[in-house]
Image 1 (tube, rainbow, N blue to C red):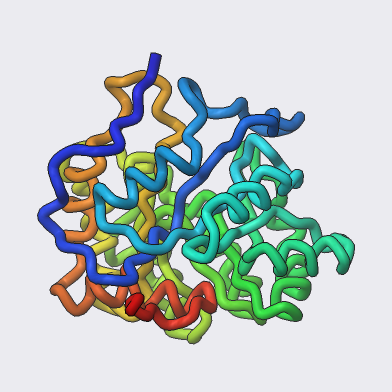
Image 2: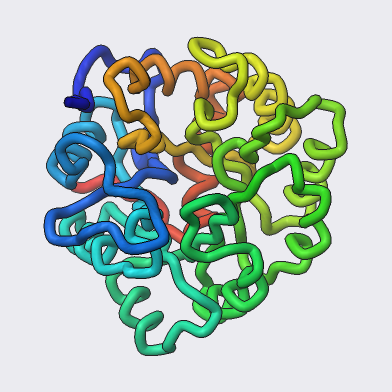
Length: 292
């Protein structure tokens, strides 16, 4: 049975106050997997109690809970998770372009600040709905989280440049076939970033890396390049609970993974941007304020 460590050595990277985990999933009892998506994660449900311990371990203060593919467009679990986590949490939901306004208002009321496009197997909302979902998101000042096979990004640039919403390219671009730093795909990422409403998410590096742990050298090469190009456009996510890990051997060491990925940022100032300032802007979060 898979056991997810939620404590251990502290990362060498010190998280600044107000740090945001911009990519994770959470599951509460009573919300079964829906047709069309994958099963729920293996092992004990990765719930709010476990995640709070994970936050304390790494030094995370705020979190963006992303709708899991297992629940497709049924956002009931996400709503319950947001209520359970309280004001430190915001959510990214799965909605169609034809979603009812009352449903969207209800999502906003519980802390949803974005919508998810997932153009890979198991995704609930595909690129075919991009413009329609963008229109709904822009009307509420939501952002979009967009995920697809990055090796096809050149085909999608024209559509992405026309988006009205702030959006983030998920999971290091998901370049499944690999990519050269000087190739057209990374040039396309930079063009999108330079247009002013696009961010790039460091999360789930293991999902597309061919070279693998511990260095993930192939993904590191272009991530370093993008971070140097626009440190003000990088956000970071733990990708907890690492849903693709089905065995203990597959499960990453979160402290090591965090140090590796945040080590691709050029300096402490860029780390602060990626963990605090950038996600605040992308997700429309209020500035972090220390409690008295």
